[in-house]
Image 1: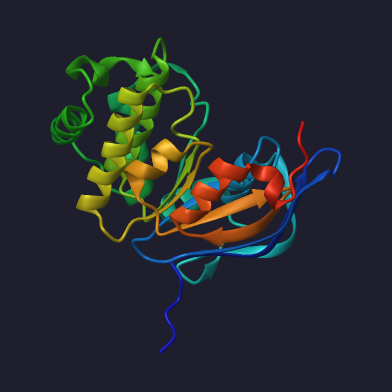
Image 2: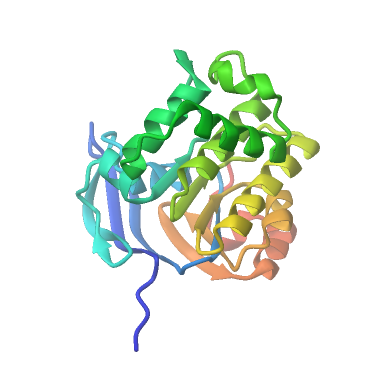
Length: 254
């Protein structure tokens, strides 16, 4: 019996919607149920473009290939439909939403995701539990989304959203970017806390840094260069990157 991957990208090509500049040039990737995969590569290699294409950003156009989620072709699905189905993206640069509290944002998002209207009290209790686990102050729930947040608070807010919305596949776009060691550990611990509650959750972590991988213990690591995955392997691949850099894999030094 053949097991269908939780998430699969097959021969994916994508270009900018304006100008038609090709960025992704044939990406193949599979993530199984409960697996953690990491994607590494130099600046400009296509990492964040891939994250945005997976969630259907209108800034990019898929010109060939497919994205499949739980066996269904979602390549042409609108972003909101992908989110409701259980795909989640933690942004590299989370946006501020003035006038909307974290509590109200999560209530509306959960209603859209699961079609249930959870009471404010029920949601507040769930949020308070997760904020405690993510080392976040209780007043956080009443603050406007990302307004005045530190870099670490913004990233923890993304993990809080992932915990409350309970996606089935999470894309973490450089969640470790700009974090010090302590904040990184809190975020990584948060991801692992979510996975302990939902062991079937699939994760694709896009990162520059080995330190996140030492916390997440990925099942597989992929190296992307110039819009293509050029090699996949285990943690030994990170050690090679540390020793030899991306030039070893065909990247051109700046």
